[in-house]
Image 1 (spheres, rainbow, N blue to C red):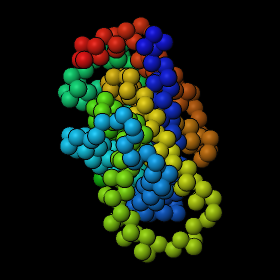
Image 2 (cartoon, helix red, strand yellow; image 1 turned 180 degrees about the horizontal axis):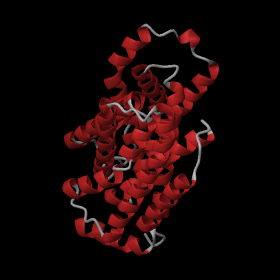
Image 3 (cartoon, rainbow, N blue to C red; image 1 turned 135 degrees about the vertical axis):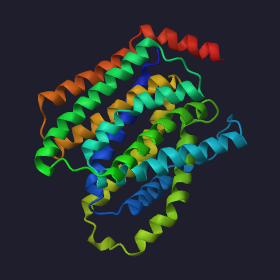
Image 4 (cartoon, one colour; image 1 turned 90 degrees about the horizontal axis):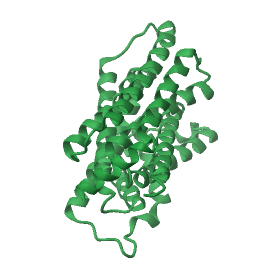
Amino acid sequence: MSRGPWAAYLCLAASMLLVGSYVGLSKLLLGVFPVFLLAWLRFGIAAVAMVPWVWRSEGDAPLTTHDRLLLFLESFLGNFLFSICMLYGVLLSSAVAAGVVMAAIPAAVAVLSRVFLHERITPRVAAAIACAAAGIATLALGRAGSDAAGAGGEQHALGHMLLVGAALCEASYVVIGKRLTGQVSAKRISALINLWGLVLITPLGLWQAWSHDFALVPLPSWGLLLFYSLAASVATVWLWMRGLRQVQASRAGVFTVLLPVASALVGVIVLHEPFSALHATAFALALGGLLLATWPGAIGASSQARSARA
């Protein structure tokens, strides 16, 4: 810890940037694949890629009943339900609604980590959460203005509810993952929760695959599907679990602000959405939250909190 957990911060940031990018790009895939089929293909491709990670490595402790339960909950909430709620939520409402609701993830993580992990929320982390939430809320307001001009500002209550569910699932994913990283390696967590996700989605995926015409899927969409699968189920989970080993869950939750930021960047760069001064302000606020959470003065407090729990 003499160098500080900067490698862990980098892993957390990279994980959320990947999540945000594939959430944005998933809009393109949803035009080719229905939701359940897309999720099923994602878990299936990732399962093949992570076969070597499933088995227990030499020196790893065997899984306890408690570990198995946490792995199931991590997959059910953070993989299965998050994917379905997010994809259907965006379809039934809008990307603007997703940005507004996702701004609540850091606050939800901090509250859950306080309740279930008994982590103290320091004033600096609280300020970082507020700054991050303000940044993403500003971003959402900027996108709301452009969406209202083109679509009449119509929103669907069911879509909003699904997005709230996705935010709670992501917050639960962070907190449960913090418990798991103390007993199970990051690679094995990634592989096992992906397998659970594949098991849970298979009946629904087969149902939609039965009537889907795969011949109509263009070749570039298959390449995008491969990136989506490896990024969503392999890279992001492994990076997140590696980073979470050295960082408090409440502080790690601040990095989730990068999810909607990355999604917005994909919208601007790939989908050519407008970029205004309001968007620039939102990015500045979000980055300010990251600086508050990761500045060296906060590292000592994090180390002391871990020592007190040990």
